[in-house]
Image (cartoon, rainbow, N blue to C red; front, side):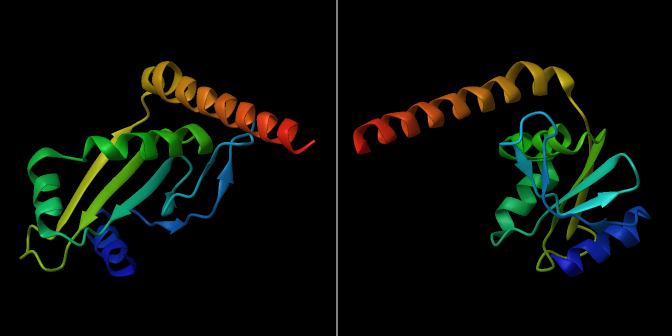
Length: 137
């Protein structure tokens, strides 16, 4: 991934600062660890698939849907407005070894799908913990 990040910086001109772990200001059970941060409003997520077919599928169809919760969740937690998604596979010949896509924050998805699902998950986990504590008492 470090070499992929260098390629992304060279191609896009974005300087990618190290990410780290962030927790949501209101919902402290929510966390995200972006691969990097860009400026004041951007984040960065990198994928270096072990299977060339996964990378080629990304080249043909864009960021896979299964990465949407991770990318939008990163924006939910960090408050950032956009994310640079990258897929890098050095086994694929140039100019196809790198794919980049700017993903804008989707507040409708975050507020109507992602956050309600995460809050429901937290409630289910808390209910299980409560049941376990009652059994242990």
